[in-house]
Length: 128
Image (cartoon, rainbow, N blue to C red):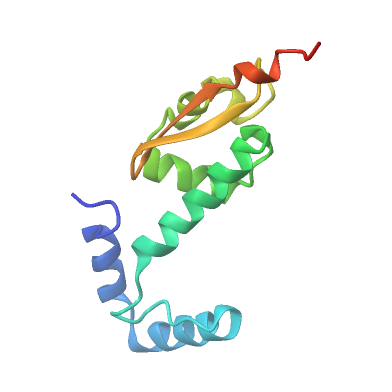
């Protein structure tokens, strides 16, 4: 099953009444100039952009516990329940600061959705 072409989402969209579709369409246009109920709306692009934004925050030093709940939900949906472990944290770090990365981290993407972290050894070196 493709995460971005979820049958559950498609069924929910189909189950909306015409009145609800119109209301969501107007809300989307007013807030984002986007019609979220349109058949041409690309959810996969929006989700991918959201994940990249959240990853950028984590790679810049933001602790996972300080993310908004909807950001944590997006990461869980896309990368699974143990998503924080990909970034050097433990599951307890989702709600409070338990782990502090020992060294600056750098982003290394091997595939579109698999990110890993690497310690930046040059940060520990001192110049003489």
